[in-house]
Image (cartoon, helix red, strand yellow):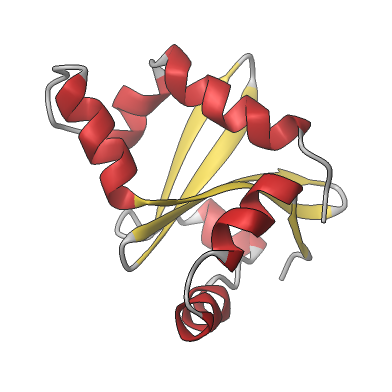
Length: 121
């Protein structure tokens, strides 16, 4: 299992959720190297940009976007699923593979870059 590190933005996003939901999400977010090798498509997804891999973990109605670094799993964003569904709908994109569509959108990467630039909590 990796150490999980939240930045300021992702920590603020998860802290806005009810405590019981936070605990439920974090209890299930137990990422191991084996999980990332044999990704369950119902739980995990991945996207790449400039040779760097970003992972998506699904838990209930939430998506955790994270990167694996030597120090552990760095969580960049914790977002409700409707955030992206609404985005895809408004942008008139075809509904399909969410990860593939997202990795092509500059707005999505700006959102992730904000998380990457935030201080770690």
